[in-house]
Length: 395
Ligand SMILES: [Zn+2]
Image (cartoon, rainbow, N blue to C red; front, side, top):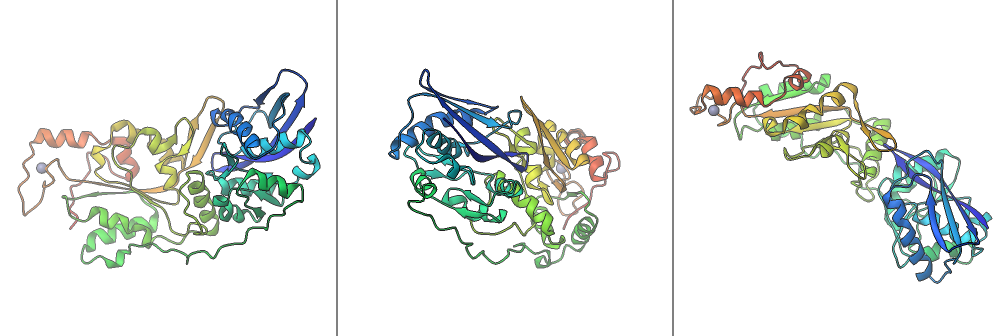
């Protein structure tokens, strides 16, 4: 017996429809999943088996083959549990195969058969809509995000509810759009800052031209406070930009419930202990890094010389290209990364070089070593060369 269902996965910041084909044949009982599944998809075998049994359905004691198409596309995440489970139930005659191939199904299953939300629903919902499907089943946690795709959304709590709906025995109501919180505006406004006319002017010029900027000043002179307020003077996100940023936050699992599209330009301020993968993205289960989370917004690097050199070096290429490419075993994927970089540093290790009120206690050697820690090519992206870097003071 054969059945076909539809699920989705993410590719970079976009979603892609996955066709789940299930064949049940005589032979040694077992469940095989083929078609470039990653570890999370392979683990789905055990979750699907337990979920089907624990919701009162029959797990066929025959040879089950699940093929995820297209076969040359790497599938990641646990969101394919639901279409695999429904496919098995259809191929074993517990649901009519014709009833289960009209919708997309996206969700992770718990062992007891509950549906769990996953990251990246927004781009997946868009890809489902683009391929002409009109409805999607997702976990309740993901329901509001899925509505952005313009689809009819069903949000069952359990696998059992999905089956009863598909059989027409207990029809689920479509999810309605929750009232969204008023469109957020940048919380911190540059206008709140008293004084600092030079630093404010520099920020305005940087904002107007989308320039990167390096602020040099003693500790406590307000560098962070100023940088944090930069998004308040940047132009509003266009609709297209807002969709891109929201997709990124959806994939990173950072989208807050019921807030609508992200309306404020991102401001990211990674600590200097951030790893390469944390900065540019990647990892075993690839996630967007800080530079992608800053897309269309601001990446603030406080205490620039404290960042390990190689972390600053990996920033160079993405800053030129506006995107970052991450190589993986079976494919490479790219994330957008167009951001304004604002860096801040003390003028010297003690922080008081050039300060009229307090004496700098650093030796010339200390100063040289301090400046050497920042990469020359990175400074060129900001518009300085190390030689011509002028010590200025914020405050
Ligand atoms: Zn000093």
